[in-house]
Image (tube, rainbow, N blue to C red):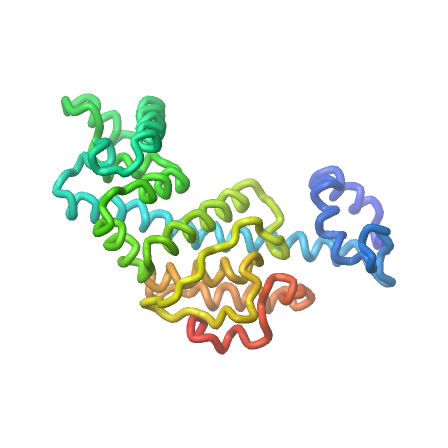
Amino acid sequence: MFMENEYKVENYLMNIGYHRLSAYIYPFYKAPKRDKILKEGTNFEQVLTLYRFDKKLRILLFNEIEKIEVAIRSVLANIGCQELGDKYWITKSEYFANAEKFNQTLSVIEKELASSKEDYIENFRQNFIETYPPAWMITEVLSFGNLNYIYSNISSNQLMKRIAGYFGLKPQVFTSWLTVLANLRNMCCHHARIWNRDFMLNPAEPKKTQNAWIDTLKIDKKRIYYRLCIIRYFLSSVSPNNNFNEKLSSLLANFPSVDIASMGFNKEWQKEKLWM
């Protein structure tokens, strides 16, 4: 591998680590990859470019997923309160299908409330006699994964449909996509490589959607592109005037050497109604 400045390369290896960088070297190996023979002309700057692109992609996605997560917290709490007429519904077993799952969730809620230093939780403890705060406070202290766990255990089909329907989805697809986004969010938080990853989770495919969607016949659902489409779809409900399209297009334009086919993009992805 060509290195213009070996001192700088040593510094990168010390501060980033060879193990982490090796994932970005892999695309530059000749086939068969197991022989680990680099393609002619490979230089260290190319590896760094992939690393920097992946980092910027993670930051972009984390910010967009945050918008979706905040909306799901609010919608879950508010529609649940409206539909059931009970602001404490999240902590009551009669509203859930599986008692064991409910008890596991309640244990998590109790643990999070006990350790929370948020002012609104402290205020509740000091000024109210109820054992648990209302749903809109509880959803704020739970993880994205916990929210999905609560939603998937709701016993009322009507409530599940109302919550999923707010985002233009059916309950089965909504649950699947929440799982996918929670998994992707965690990867972004832990700085995992995502740009060309073959994700383990296989998202459910909607038969009919309320908002614009993509032609998935030639799409690999385990690549990042499909997850970008899921984010874009949610944002059409959460933030209709979002500029995610522009941000993504700008990022790809700033890194023209990145192989977007490895990300699952097709050549005419920008002509899909979802991205227009």
